[in-house]
Image (cartoon, rainbow, N blue to C red):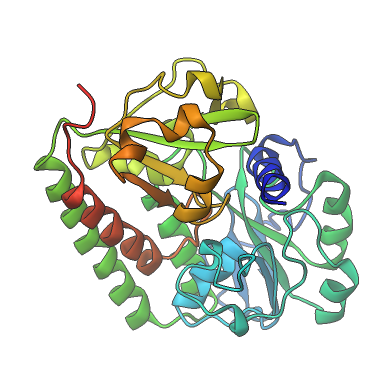
Length: 338
């Protein structure tokens, strides 16, 4: 039972490499409107990370979004009418994808990535659909087969989250929220929490400069080591001083992971392991580890912690993640491996 769930989770993890068709929504109209906010006539305009300017006569009222986008916008007071993507874990607790929000705050349009209830989405009559993306049109939670149908329902606003520090997509989601009428005070408060947490994590890492860290995921048959440059949060943690293992060969899922056998689990010595939370809680992950991984020094030292690899792009949520991470760094011994 558990092995099947882990396999499904890893399939979701690796789905980020599935190519999607180029998007065709809302090309710039040459009217001179400014991106990222209201038009001079009182309408709404926002340039997404494909360089596509979406323009509507009024600020969008009905919004559908993937969970990582919904959780981020929710922080700033934006009401999301329908959410596709994870909301709850198997035990009913909130999924990290929605960040600080309560799952009950949203109407689910399907909690398995790339399996959207199209009829329910269409019934909402959304003005826009918001999600994160890779490259120029690989959307999180939207399959290639669904893309054309979704674009007929509403324009897709994409914020790119790969190959850049997390500060960039966080800033873009905040800009989108502002354009949609988000509360400036809530945005400022969330940003302040993020900045304070960044300083706290930087200080914790500076106190343990030799702490070796690995970010990893896995399936029943394979281990995946994250390439930090592909993940915006890991890239940012590195900029704060985290000594993250960096695979030289990382072809899996368009360069996000290096694939190893579980017999190779010790390839990258680690004092602290960040385990992909899409597989489950720390207790669930630990129970599922094969003997070669369970014997790793970091696991034996109780220095395997959850990494919310799928997380809401809100300043407050990333602040909360870093607060926990700083506490774990404070607790961790840097002498688990030589």
